[in-house]
Image (tube, rainbow, N blue to C red):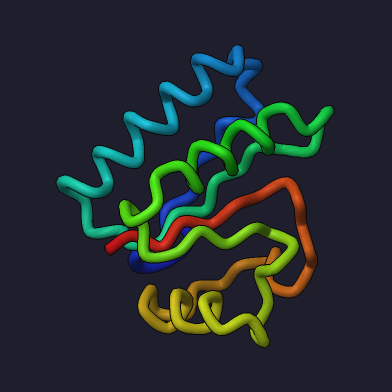
Length: 111
């Protein structure tokens, strides 16, 4: 955990197959949506060849309406409207990736 309401989900450093990584993602996000108090999720998919990043982002965007926002790491900075709103909603957690344009992460803001 990175502070109140902010959950870190690392699926990029576990040597998962693509299918397994997406299955873990679906399971963990569902758990968060139907139980825990976290409303903001930082998904770490890593750099690698980009296959996992592409799969994660495609999955997130295909779920339109399920999340309040999907924010790509390269857009995650204090001048991005949804980033600012999400961070305020989650208690402005400390996050070293703020403003770093880190393509290895994607953020989900849950309803």
